[in-house]
Image 1: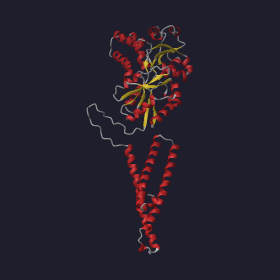
Image 2: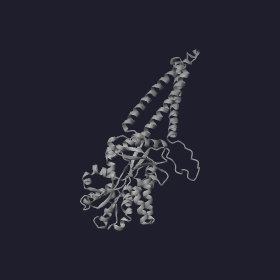
Image 3: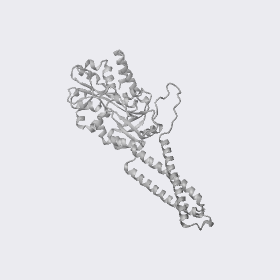
Image 4: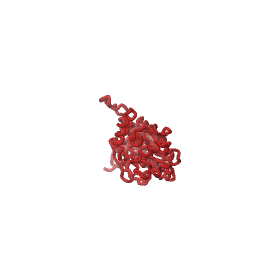
Length: 445
């Protein structure tokens, strides 16, 4: 059956339903454009293209309404009984106008109703009503899960100065790639210390954190933090090394070069006692390679506290870049660092790097964990995993010194927990002989 053969009243009903459908579509499109533009998922140019499409649909609706009016007028004229065909033309036109006015009013009301219905549906989709979780036990989840994640804050530890980090095109490209995969905005959340990073994710100020091993196990003491990935180096290794570094102008350098760097701790202790090395700088007390490992494998391994043999209390400079530059500038005699940070320094500050000599090297340390909050929506967590596990932008990875990322779990950093346990024993006053035995066991190459 052709459309022209359908009864006029049925045509009117069909067109009314079609108008309602178009009203719903128009409302959903306009709402989605506004939402995505506000969230940064689309740019202005993309929004303009969508608006042009929206205007085209509106024009189609106007043409449809015009056609609808013609059908209504024809239907009205067909409904006039033959005996009334002698009605004066002016009376017939007035009746037709009133009829069309009523129909146009009904049609417009239906379109508006469609828009309102679509708006309500959109609000329900964006903010679903989720009934409260039943309380099964005292350990049940007490914090509310975000209903709609539109922005993620990514806290990056201060292996580099943050002002430099935020400006580096490489990190910008990494974040842009992450946004494309997740489909939501990702912001770098500035932290100036490991403690700030731990507080940020525990307080939900940041939802993803690039940790060091020690800072991760501190944060993971809260049950809501989960490591899901770790970095893989260009050589395929899943770890890095803690270093003690000094300036090449130091008198001890020539002697240290003849020693095995993972067994040079005794010589360094003797050099400090003799006053050949006066000033010492750690990174941060929550840093794995910048404090925990060198403190245990150099000082505790030899049964001493750094404060007892240094002429000046050790400094804490808060980042690997800061300790490296302090050594290069001869502001401190010895400082902690690690293999990954020095590899980056070689590219960012080649002149400073040339002035640095590695005088001690630790056993391998598991590479950096990347962790997120467990209460993130499952689809967001899966997309985050997808991004890291499949990331292949070699331009970005090569500059960072990585070949990629691989799946990981909390147990990967159990060795760091062993180091942390010894540190607690130190603070509780355990005997030096016991600490030495444990440190020697864990710190052996």
